[in-house]
Length: 357
Image (cartoon, rainbow, N blue to C red; front, side):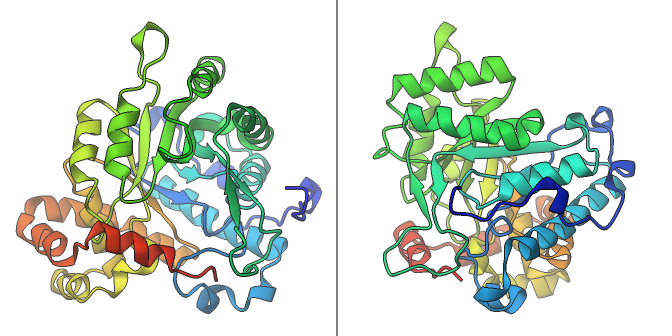
């Protein structure tokens, strides 16, 4: 992050409410949180979600102070909602999500949040290189992948400095066959050592049309005493991209924690006429239905919201109630899933064409 303007803790924007007084003790939480706040779209000025300019304004109006203040506001809403619903607040970061770990760490500490009162996951494997810019020259990357053991050891130290005492789950960011992560015994041993020394669960996230193959391969990896290396998988699955379904069922049967990212397909699913039609029939919002369709799946996933406003987050959290309705109204669930599914190759081709904005 040498080229990114960091903020000293003394200049951290003040949060708007005394969150520490509202936190629900972990002793009242019987299971892991089902919906969390992903920081991919809040920890940096640019991302590929649709219509960011409508929400954030032009690309020159998103300095670090502005983005951190917005992140704090949405985190306030998450903690308030978690308190009212007696659930554990969950935040998901990554080394490549701009300053997401710094934002989360400063927020939790400034509000005196105990590590036992929040669930935090993060990822290593990509380095943010966009220099706090929304748009780069054609072909220039916003993040660079490196799944070497050397990069893991570097990035785990950075994560520890920002949010170390809060981390519950540390994930390989976007594992692929090409990156070598699935066959590198040195990295596997380093991850296992991290789990033993820090008490963190170890997971991986996957992307591309090969998500199902990657999940199955990851499930085979063992470390000393035959223990499975990966405790969880974070996968793209939504009403448009459904190819990983069988692999996710298998992973759940193997006791892996299933986390779903991009549940709204970066905003694309909200434009599908079938989703809009069924949402009107059910009297709910399209985002509630889209995420509810995921939460109602038999592999019992946890789902990340990509909300960047309090209104979006509150609406996304309504998916829990919709999921319960869908479990008893299976015909509606089937209508949405069958009516919206895309070919996986086409889905990922369209995603790769999304512009950073």
